[in-house]
Amino acid sequence: MLNYAILADPTSLQASQPGAPSVGTVYVIVSNTHQSEVRWDFIDVEIPVGSGPNDLTGSPTAISASIEKDYTVNREPEPTFDWDSTLGRFRAHDPSGGRLTLPEEESLVLRLENIPVSDMAGLVRLKIYERSGGGDSNLPIRRANFITTLGLVKQAPKIPRNFRPEKDSLVDVDAGQNVVLKWEGPDNLDYWIRDPQGNEVLVQSAVQGPRVTQRPYTWSPPSAPRRGTTYTLIAGTTTAAQQHHGYFLTTTVHALVPEFDSGTRTPWVEQAPSKSRATFSAAGMEIHNGAGALGTVTADRVDVDRVDTRAVHGRTASDGWIDFPQSGLNVHQGGSTQLGTLSAEKAEVDRVNTRAVHGRNPSDGWIDFPQSGVDVHKDGQQGRGTVWADRADVNGVKTAWVQGPSDSDGWIEFPPSGLNVFHGQGRDWGTVWADRADLNSVTTHWTEGPDGKKSRITFTETGVKITDPEKKRGTVVAGETNVRSVVTPWVSGPQEGAGWIAFPNEGVDVCRDGRVTFGRIRFASYEEVTHEGTGRPLHRRLPPYEWPPRSGN
Image (cartoon, rainbow, N blue to C red; front, top):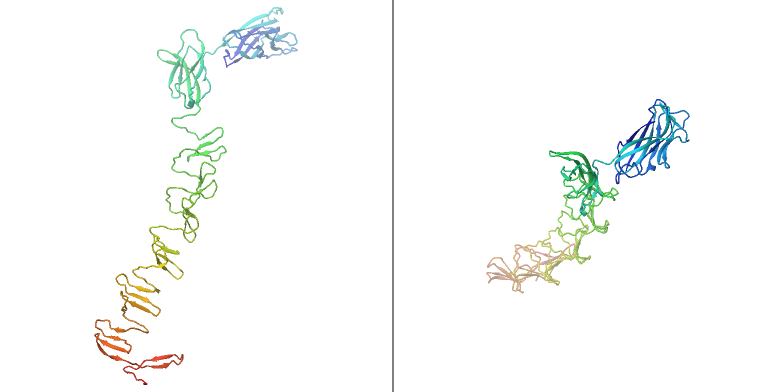
C-alpha cells in the first residue's frame, strides 16, 4: 500500500577488500502516495546476511538503525526502528504495540547506518514487509503482509588503487635492499611506472577478453632509490596510434641514508635522537650539541684555510691544549691551565718570551732569563754552564775567568785588583800579546822586547836595570831625561865619536875621541846650609866659573 525507494551512501556501496573494510549507509524512503491516511502496524526491512555476492553484510547487529519523519500525529507515540533478532529483520513500529498513522502525501525515512559491507560484489535485494490499511480505497488492515523488494549494488573497485610500497617505505640501500611497489586494479588496463626524471616503464600489459578481474600487481625498480623518490603509477589503454593515460597514482619512498647528486639546500641538519645539529649560516657552518651549545667535530683530517677557535685540545681530558689569547698562543698541559711543552723540529719566530730554555733531557743544560740578562746552567741544575759560540758580540762580559777553547790554552782571571793572565792549566804567568797598550800603570818584574830584540828592563828593589840580549848592561835612548840621580860608569854624547865622561873612583875623567882626556877632577867642595823652617840641610850651588872651588882645607 505504501511506496518505497532506496538510496545508498556512497551511491554505489563498495564491497570490502582485504585490509580495506567498506562501511556504508542505506536509506529506505517510505511514502504515502494516497490522498487519504494509511494506518500501519509495522514496517520490516529484511537484509540478506552473509558473505556472498548477494549479501549486504555479515554483521547486522553492527548496523545503527533509526527513523526520521517530518510530520506529527496527535496523540500518537513516536515510532521506533531497530533490529529484531527473533525475526531477523529491522522493524519500525509503535513501541507500545499500537497502530500508527502515515498522513496523506507524507513520508518517513528508515535509516541503516554503519553497515559493514560484505566483500563480494553483486546485487543485493532488500525485502520490505508492511501490514497496513486505509488509503484511497480505505482498505481494512489485512493479516497478510504487503511485500516490496528493493535493490542496490555492491561494487568491487574497477580502477587502480592502493599504490604503495609493499613493506616499509624506508629502504636501506647500504644493506642491499630494494623497494617493492604494489597496487590493485583491473587487468584490462596497461600499467606504466614513471620515475622522478619522467622516464616511463611499461610494467604490465592489459589482458585481452571480455572478463575483467581485479588482481594485485608488484614492481621493483632496476636499482634501489638513493634518496626520497616519488613514483607515478599510470593506468590506461594502448592503441596502435598512441597511449591513453586514464589514471594516475603516486607513492614516495625514502632511502635510509639519502644520497644526492646535485646537493642539498637546507638551513640545518639534525641528528636523532641526541639532536646534535649542523646549522648553515651566511658565514659558513656551525656545529651544536643536543643542548644547543657549540659541539664537537671529529675527523681524521681537516683541510681548511683558517680556523677561528678559542682553544685546541687533545682527544682525552688529560691531554694538553692550546688557547689563543689576544697576545698570541698559550700551550697548556694535563687539561689544566699550567703551561705545557711545545715540541717541534724547527720554530721560526720573531720573539720568544720564556722563563727558561732547556735541552730535551732532564740532565741537559738550560738557560734562564733573569732581569739582569741570561744565565746558562749545566746538568739540569743551577750550576753555571758553558756557552759555545763562533763569535759573541756583547757590550759587556762578567766572568770569573776566560780561557781558550782547549784545556791547555791560556786563561785570564779577574781578581778585584785587575786582570791576571796565565798559561796552561796551572797558575803560571802567561804572555799578553798586543800591538799597543795604553795603560795608566804597569806593575811587572821585567819588560822585554819581542823576538830577535830581547833587550830587557828589569825592575829591582833599587830601581831599573837595562840589559842587552846578552844580559850585559844596555842603553837607554831618550830625548830628555829628568832624574834626581844617575849612577853610571860613564856618560857619552849621542853621536859617533862624541865625548864622554867617566867616573873612576878617583873622580871624573873628561875624554874625547875615546882617548884624549882633558884631565881629572879630583875634588869638589860645596857649602851646606840649613833650612830656616825645617832645619834640614840644603845644598848650595857654587857660583859659575868658580873652579876649582874654594876649600877651607
